Length: 164
Image 1 (cartoon, rainbow, N blue to C red):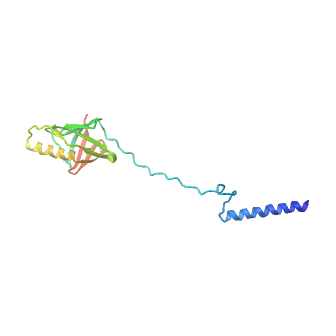
Image 2: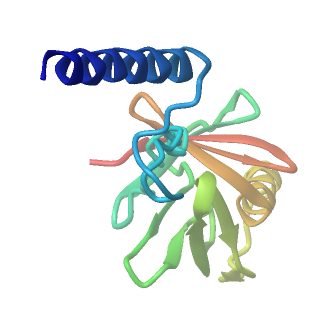
Image 3: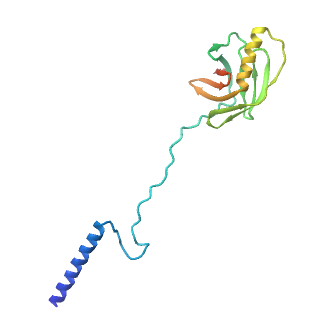
C-alpha cells in the first residue's frame, strides 16, 4: 500500500513539474480543446475625443464691428440675424437684405444669394455696404471669440458684437 501511495505522489509531482514547464514556455493550456485555451486579451479601440463643436447662435442679432480690421463707423453699422428657420435678414448700412444661411459642421457657414432693397446711397456708404455684402455672401467659416462672432470669407474677416 505504501508503495502505491509513493508511486501516486511521484506521479503527481512529475505532472506538476510538467505543467510548470509548459506554462514557463508560454503554452498556457488549461484544458483540452480549442475553447479551453487562454486567449490573448484584445485591446478595445477607443476613438480619440473630438473637441466639442460650437453651436451657431441662432436668433441673436449681430452688429458689425470691422471688416479686415477696418472699423465700421457711425450709427448705421451693418447688422444681421439668422433665425431658427435659417433665414438671414439684416441691414447693410443703407439697404436691407434677406437670404438663407446654414451653419454647417465644423463651424462652416453657407449663405445663399442676397435679396436687397435698392435705396440710393452715398458713395462711401455704398462701397462699404458692398464690401460687407460680398464678405457675408462668400462666408466660409465662423467662430465665437470671446463675445464676438467672427466670420471668415474670401474677402476677409468680419467681426460682430452681439446687439442688445
